[in-house]
Structure formats: structure tokens, C-alpha cells
Image (tube, rainbow, N blue to C red; front, top):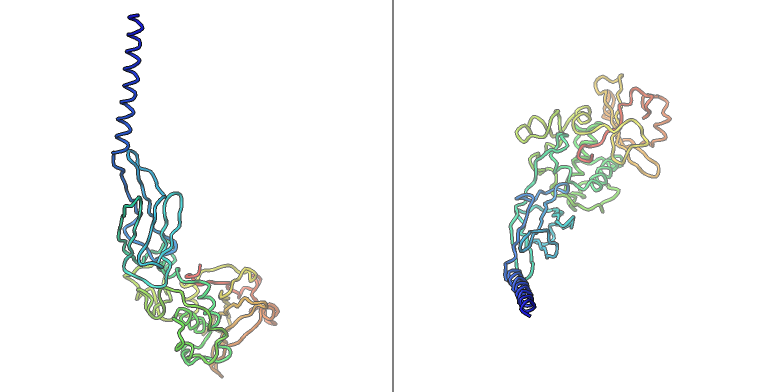
Amino acid sequence: MTGYMLEKSILSRGILFIIIFFFVVATIVFFFPEKYRILVSRDSLYVSKRSPLSITFLSGKFFLKKNKNIELTIYPEGYCSILDKDGSFLIFYNTNQIIDSIKLQINYKNKQFVTNISVILPISDFDKDGYPDFMEEINKKNFLDWFCIVAESQFFYPSDEWYDVHKDCSGLIEFAYKMALMRHTEDWVKKFKYLPNVSVPDENLFYFPDIPYLGKRVFRIREGEFDTNSIESDFSESASGSLLRNYSMVFKGRDYREAQKGDIFFFFDINNLKMPSHSMIYIKDVEPYFIYHTGPDKTNKGFVKKVFLNELLNHPEIKWRPIPENKNFIGIYRWKILD
């Protein structure tokens, strides 16, 4: 009997201990405050589609872990997009206006967390092509559309904005390049007697001639990475065909079948030592063709021509055929800001 009472007493104490233990644990869990932490990958948001800002919200009473059950709002609204990735939020700057900062607001269980993030235009050159990365953030399709539109318009009615001193083959691609980077307002359109299309929207963060850091100097003329301390020596408002080819463009091969709209075909005419480099703008259409300026000679100032690819492939002089067997065909080049 005594043993039974002892065993019962021990069992009662054990049950009481378990009850007290769970009560203490429950009390700690219930009353212990939840901790929070916000991880931000940088203290600034880059105006770049390549380098988003990462936001991670951590919460927990004992161990912090990722928590996606939050409401993330960015002010002012409409300037950024949010992508949920692996429990974190990627913030992309996606508007054509630059502001100084944004406000991130996180709502979680009736609590509000607010942080301000500065917005900066990066001057990095990650691909080391000599151009700041923000130049490659332009809407490439729209740029190409305007580049080809302006070039082709000069075949029909040369613009007064294209000065005679620049009227040659490289001058045409320079002119079309600058015009494509401009804001295409109604006043701008009125400067042209003819444009095959004026419906392409403007969706860039900046426009010629007010390109950040570069201004009007949009053509690179020297080798090297982008450096804000040497812009005046590295960039120019205009450049020869060979300088454009070597420093503002990238070689894409010699197979015309791989060419894309807006690519530049370069030829070398050994018989014209004064202007040996010749360039043509490739317009990839149902029937591909080229727009180019013949260049001046002793008798006239030259003019803009249109020639179809098939015509050029069967040109009586092989030096003008865009084929690998032609040693005078330098190759196909593309603007660096598009590559």
C-alpha cells in the first residue's frame, strides 16, 4: 500500500511538472515579443533593369526566418516594379522619369516599417565596352525603329537638320543615331518633310542632347572603360566611319543572314583613299534593303540611296557584295548601346 501511494505521488508530481513546463513554455511563447529585421541589398536603388534592389523581411520569436506574408508598398507609386523571388522582393526602377528617392513601406500584423531609399544613375561599365551602363537601359526596340525611320526619311527628303558638312555615309548614321536618341515631340516631327512612321513612343530616361555626363558627346573615339574624368578625350559629337566602327560599335560577324535591323555593314574601298570606309544601314524588312549615302566626289556632294540586299549580293563589282569571300567587306557592326 505504501509503495502504491509512493508511485502515485511520483506520477502526480510528474504530471504536475509537465503541466507547469508546458504552461511556462506557452507563457513564454505567448508573451515573448516577435523580432523583425529588414535586409536591404544596397542603400540606393539603381536606375537600371540589370541591377535590382533586394528586400528581405525576417521575423520570428526565437529564430529569424524569411517572411513573405507582408504588404510591400513603394511611394511614389508607378516608378518601380516588384518581383517575388525565393522569399525576397526584387525592386526594379521602371519609369522614364528620374526622382531623388523612394519610400518603402512594409505592413505586417498591424505594424508598419518604413525606410527611404535614394535613387541614383549608376556610372558603372560592367561589360567594359566604354559606355556607361545606363546608356544600355534605353528602349532598344524603339531606338532601332527611330534610327531606321530617320535614316530612310533622308532617302526621300533630306532634313535641314542634317548639315551639309556631315553629309556622307558615316554622317548619315551619326545623324540617325542622334535623332533616334532625341525626344520625338510634335515640334521635332515638324522639322522633317517626311517620316514613314511617327507612332513609336518615347520611353527613355534621358534624351539627346542632354545625355547624363555625355551631353552631345555620344560617340566614343578611344579605347578604354567609361571614366567620368576623361569624357572630353574619350567621346566626341561626331566621328569618322572607322572611329564609329572601332569604338562605338561591336563586330557581329560577316554573315548577312545573321544581321539584325539597324546593323551597319562596312566596306573598304581601296580605290578611294580619301574616304576608304563605306557604311550602309541594314533595314530588315520582308525584302531586306540598305539605306546609305554615296559620299561626295569631285562632281557632286553625293546623295542618299536605297538598295535591296539581293541587288547588292549580285552587284557587278564583287567589292560591294556583303559576303565572306569579299575581302573588301569588313563586316557587320552593331551599336554598343544595343549589344
